[in-house]
Amino acid sequence: MELSKHYEPKEAEKKWQAYWEKQGIYRFDPKSKKEPFSCDTPPPTVSGKMHIGHAMAYSQADYVMRFQRMLGKNIFYPFGFDDNGLATERFVEKKCNIRARDIPRPEFIKICLNETKEAEKELKKDWSSLGISPDWSINYRTIDEWCRKTSQRSFLDLYRKGREYRKEAPTIWCPKCQTAIAQVELEDKEETSFFNHILFGLENSDKKLEIATTRPELLPSCVAVFVNPDDKRYKGLIGKNAVVPLFDYKVPIKRDKEQTLRKELE
Image 1 (cartoon, one colour):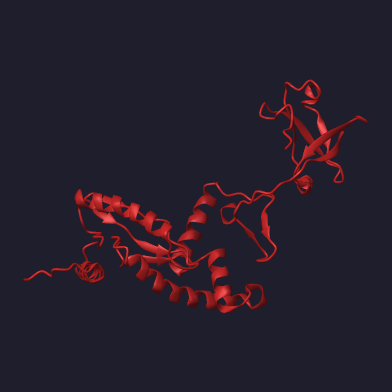
Image 2 (cartoon, rainbow, N blue to C red):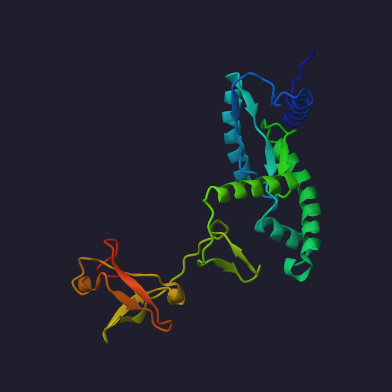
């Protein structure tokens, strides 16, 4: 066979990727007696298009899996898509020019299922083009029935083991999406601020305790007041209770070496 004098990577990649898939080179064999080695990468979120960060992260994982495969191990390397979350909801809302809160929940879920299924087809092409070696015959969607049942089964298992609990606690709320969001979904933004001086009361005393804070809006969520034990002004207050102004409830005054003796001003 005569080799081409000019290497065309796009043509070669498609050819060999199709060959790998047809031959099942990266298929997991559940009956194999070889030592198993598994890797379930965090499934990419269905919220847009692939970017260079995806290519870097998934290539790194693939280096590990290829090395383990060359050691003769039976590789379990599935691939899925995360289409069950706020990022996907926002993707669908933007694409279809709708708002989840304006339409019935069952209808919105149906739209999400259809739109993510179409988006995943394109995303799979992109990930396949990287030449990574997962078993594409073992795939999943975090919104599909199997994943939801698995998640529910895991939740029930943790509940039976006493590891689940319910409590009241502050949460991060998005006024636009009208839902709670996770810290990981936020982007920090640094802004110039200033200290606000607030007078706390002292239990069983007419004295006031001046607190300086840059976040006065968090006053209702105050759970304690901390003072540096080396601060002679407040050392005698450790162990007593302060009274939160406006909301009139008591919080403990505790010691904390991390508290500076002098606030830094710009």
